[in-house]
Length: 130
Length: 130
Image (cartoon, rainbow over all chains, first blue to last red; front, side):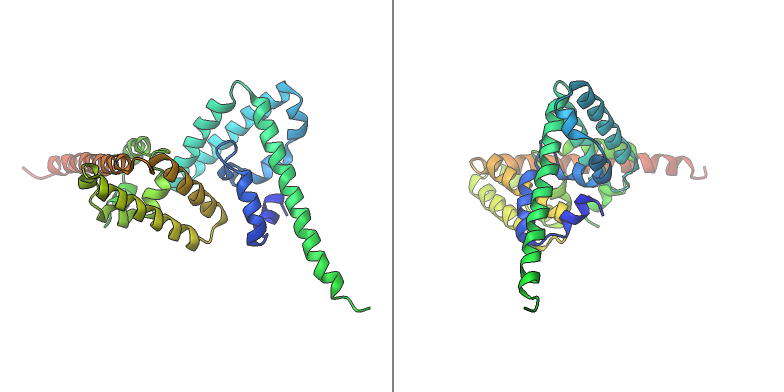
């Protein structure tokens, strides 16, 4: 199961922490629309390697364009077009920055998932017979 | 049929004109989510009446909060929360401005719909027998 699918199964309290990770710097529409592709790229290395970050950013924009062209819903297509323009303006001169933003979001998601995992294990252990 | 439903039935070329009307000043998510309520309010009068504009803006935020609370989809709920915050920051001190923005969008939509209507009537008249 992709990390993003696990995130969506969290209880409401933890989902609120996820809410804070996503804004115009990295819109949740992109995280959801390209979930598996995003999780397969090495954003941590790209944070420290400008040419790799530039390549990943170009690929991200390409993926977004394809999603946009294939999207049948007018509202969602409109939103993807705007997001594409905003990301291009924001990161074209500094693709290393988006690599850092995405890398941080993925790491924070893993931290939230491990918190959820520990919360679930607590009651399970307590309910075991002595 | 609501004006917004008619808009969604336009052909792609005219839909692109609609694209340009919507951005962070008045996100298309709000136009679509509150379509009928928006069309039932008198934004033109509110443009020239600050207290009416303030009341409409408060009601708009209330409608958005209700939509947000009832929205089952995590991504859409997240987007509505962000939009609510952004609109509050942008227009709280100047609700007349959002009345003007919405009024302009609705007027432009009607202009686009009448263009579409004239384009449809053209070939129909040409195809009538002499």
